[in-house]
Image (tube, rainbow, N blue to C red; front, side, top):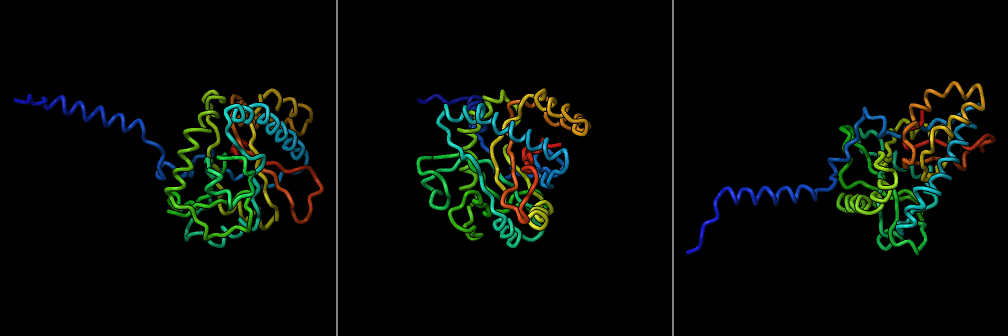
Length: 287
């Protein structure tokens, strides 16, 4: 005669299995809701700097990019994780995204993902040697802060003109996010000693209109790494005008060394710029 398993043991077994499943849960689209009150998740840093601040932004941006090459990107290389030297965003792509935006949408979200070149390489201007790499996918953000269903896009380093009909479905988008979490993000987090890194950027439509209507520029993004605040302070102290910005920069950057961020640069502007390169920090730490 078979012995019956006591009910409490069955319940305990079910709880253990449930906990194991829970530990394996990964991000879902519901997790990607934009907190509109959270300035860390937003990237509306688009107005071009001017006067003395122009020089400061150029110097700080250059230092962030150089530090990333020595630091966080070098770590990715050691682990055979691929990335692009620059992520090019055409202003005509922005115009198309606006023209086709869903009713009552708030803007777009750029999410860090990992993609396979054998799946998307035919659409992108990327070296064939890179099997998988760090990339951004763009999603529309609806009025409630959630991402629009099955409406994600590749917009950087395109081989041909952007086509709004080349939509990426939710499943593919989630796969690319999960791949990033399992691989590249682990290397980045370990290097940054657990510091909160930029994993996505939010553009409101107002900022995108400003970029297109006022600046008429394409945009180039590069991976940056926050440097020691003391090095930023030296630049601030070199000019009485810049020194007035010290409190803002200290609040934004101090204690956040080794954190990944994203540096944007306006390029190919009309009319042609005659001043310093206009960097902006899309990691939302920019004062």
